[in-house]
Image 1: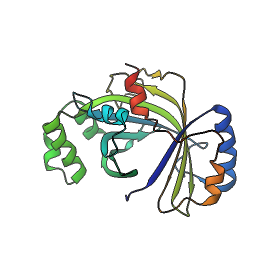
Image 2: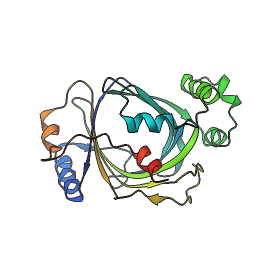
Image 3: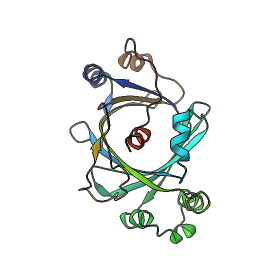
Length: 223
């Protein structure tokens, strides 16, 4: 996946209702959504010194983070993802994981990763061995996704963000999670070369500034 532009806003519930209606009028919904939304569970990795967290909080421009993710507790489709940020543009690399492989990583059983056919899995293995990168915490939230083909635009509304604190029992649907403070709602807009005016107007809100909200950071700051 190539480099993409990305903006984030923390919005109010009234803003969510407004943008939801606008986007329904001009864009399509993700084919994988159920009743217009799905639940995302991510397991984020960090070093013993919390390098990923500190770089995000400090606003370091060139940074990366690893996570494992699946949707609606469906363990038949799990992905390892590396999100990179450079000069304001985001890029994401992905590799598929089985439920067994995911659990082995959580358990610290990583030797098999060295011989993986997937470059990203080998990279994660290398960084786990050299930097101490390890599973850190679960992040759950609900997402309403919208897509617009021109510009390869994706607009998402994320809410009900919950943290597993330091729990890493990623595949357990019964893990107890706690809501992050202030119950934030996050608008994210991602696009390739250009953002069509119709989408720009649909997501436009008065007196809202572009932010750098991080669900991972919010869940870690709760600790």
